[in-house]
Amino acid sequence: MKYKNKQGISLSMTSKDPATALTREVIQEAIKILSSYNHFDDKSKDWAIHKCKKFLQENFNLRRMND
Image (cartoon, rainbow, N blue to C red; front, side):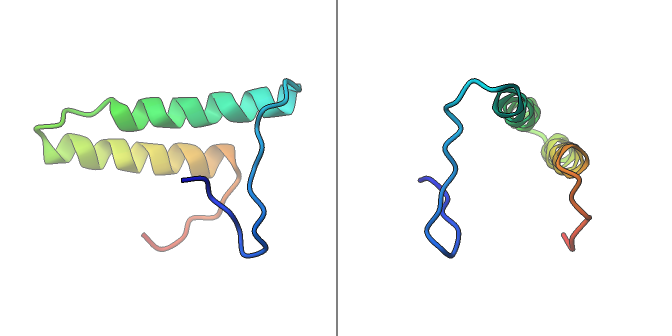
């Protein structure tokens, strides 16, 4: 399911310009972080979620919001 904002606009990240390529790399790294936890360990899952949130907040310059 592709995300659309309130105006019905969705991202198209198919171009090969450097900014798009870097954004795709950051998103791929976030997915890698979320996929790296031990599925049988809740602490490991919590660590992966926390690390991914922190990673995305830092790389997209987002203010920390309430969890």
